[in-house]
Image 1: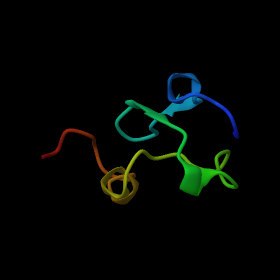
Image 2: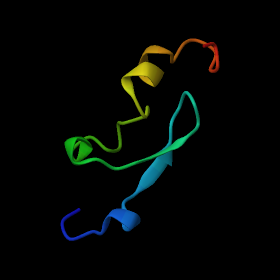
Image 3: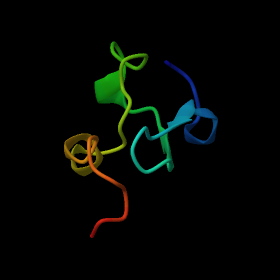
Image 4: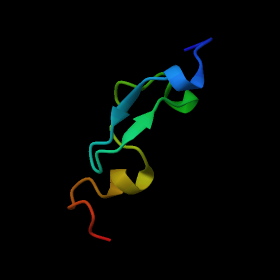
Length: 52
């Protein structure tokens, strides 16, 4: 990802909320395995979204 401008970073939808999230440096080696946009969505993975 070296030399890529911020507006051209890859993105994918969150498995829980469906919102798109972009690549982060800390996910560089595991980007294919990242499914959730946040810790909150990861913890809510078995529950219905929008529950409060």
